[in-house]
Length: 186
Image 1 (cartoon, one colour):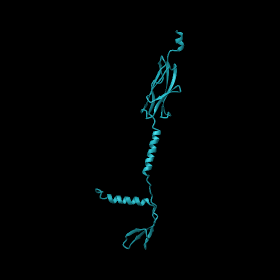
Image 2 (spheres, one colour):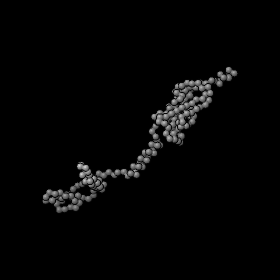
Image 3 (cartoon, helix red, strand yellow):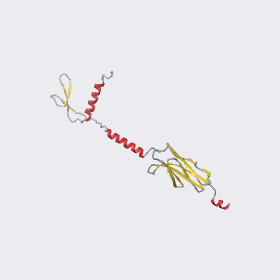
Image 4 (cartoon, helix red, strand yellow):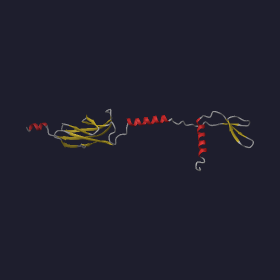
């Protein structure tokens, strides 16, 4: 194609093709060959013409732009309602299977996620099956914890407080003075 020389005729031909394909062919088509061998097609019969059987034209209906935009909006809403899961939701302290002294029984938990928390999400920590609290900062302190072995779990909750993802669970042991032993020393 030389610098657009064929562009206009090509566009006209394509427009004609698409326009004709948009309407079903319901009229008859007749072929006529004159005495010089020239072939013409018409929708009106002439003497000596023969009817041509035309196959139905396959048409494709393109979706409307508003339907495409509505579908994209629904997909975006679904993504917001069900976001991709976090790669990691975990305790950073204490470590799993840790054992440590805590004279007053205070234990600090630190949790994090990768990627960081999404808008409206918070961390929730459970200790021995009971919720400790929720916050977006990732630091939780439990005071006067009994000595012994405990289990902790972390979750991500949405703005309505529903758990959207579970993180890891840890087991740890708190060592602290016994109240019984303290009374015997007095």
